[in-house]
Amino acid sequence: PFSERAYAWRQAHMRDPEWVLPSVLVQAAFAADRSGVLVTADLATGDPDVLSVAVGEGVGGAVDGQAVESIAIDRATGAVRFLAPASSPLRAELDPRGGIRRVPASGAESLLGPAEIDALRSLADRVADFPALEGPSGQRFPADLEFAFRDGRLALLQLRPFVRSRRAEESERLRALDAPLRERAD
Image (tube, rainbow, N blue to C red; front, side, top):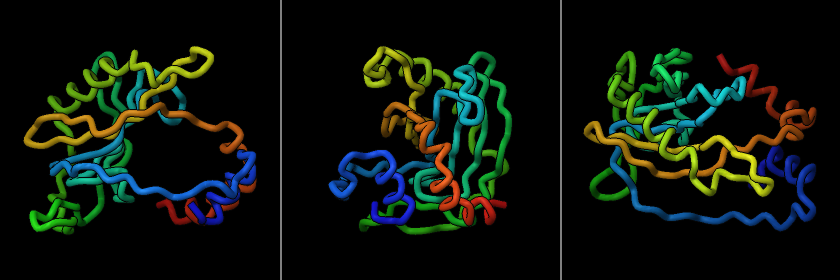
């Protein structure tokens, strides 16, 4: 919360930016084979007929800074458009004695099969009317879901509205702070 980028964002968008305090959330761990994030809209275009998915092996996929598989799923047909491979050499798994250990990733060409794709499509349909996805003016937001698979079974770990700040996206200051990341993003 105290990085230069986070501070600049708060300065531009909050009335009292000094009153942002870090917090810790403790939740039960889920020993996932694969895990990731699903947004119920195309991240590039906002098209609600496309699901944006980032998935990695083990726990914390797409949340833990891993190089994860990125795909777009057509909601109606289940057709998958491959955007980027999972290239992390390691995956995180729960250590039975506590904590997380890093072990070699499988190197699988694709992380989600047809059954998992169908399960994610079904989940996206089921959460569409979730009350928390409605804004104060009645507008509907896409869902931002954290999910996991273990032994072929889907678990929903978190659900929240996916809200973009147009003002933040257009901020030259924030773009300048992100420039070094874009230069290294190959």
